[in-house]
Image (cartoon, rainbow, N blue to C red; front, side):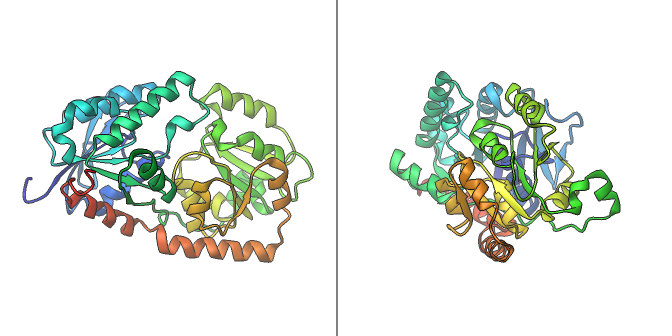
Length: 368
């Protein structure tokens, strides 16, 4: 400790300032709320930031020349762990990409806090070999970290059943989003704002059921869908964009990183469609709930847990299409229910304090 503060390293993300990522949003709010309590260093990817700030919110930023996702996440996480394990009192590891190194660091496991995130090895985008490696890495990470954090009750149950270990349930916050009033300049840029529309915001990958959602809007849907995502980030995204561009009921927008602009589109939609089938608590879902949007979700246990089984759920395109005919009174009640859940569960100050309590522990309580 220095100046009586626990020295905390946070690894496994692209870094901050946040550029449209779930873990990154979590780190930014931990930094914002906890920098006064802890001496925090955040590992960042120099591949992402052209301007390398030395600190944000009083937290030191340390850069490594790797990306925090894909194959490069493995050396990125491993090197971050090796550079942190002796120097810091506690290390918050977000994701399990670097899990293969942890059996060699058993004497430091009491320092390590792992937030598993989702079960990444289940994602359909990975090859069979990649899935096997990710599952191994997850197993080694879970077994060799002192404290475990689950961001969803289903993840918590999975850790207990699969690895016979306890974890602390700490979800995501979403109350940083704001309802925005649109003006004439907004409607000139986005003419769809003048009328009712459905909205979805997601990374363009198969396990987010992109095609299932878009197919439900291809013909005779009561409202068009605006779908915001990184269409040009992969060959899959480019193919989907080519297939669905130009259709009357479908509006595809590239990722929007300006939060106020994104919030204008989000907070004025008639209904929010959430297609994620993998992962734990998804930030875009929590943010939509904090905005009080009516939500139609893919029927996964994760989504049902997050929305307390009070949203509308679909398992295929035709079922989603039928739900689009839900009357306005029911949608208004649905939005109110989502807002009430978010007020109880998804506020950043509360989330940050739960992390503070976990960090202040000694990492021995869950060594079982």
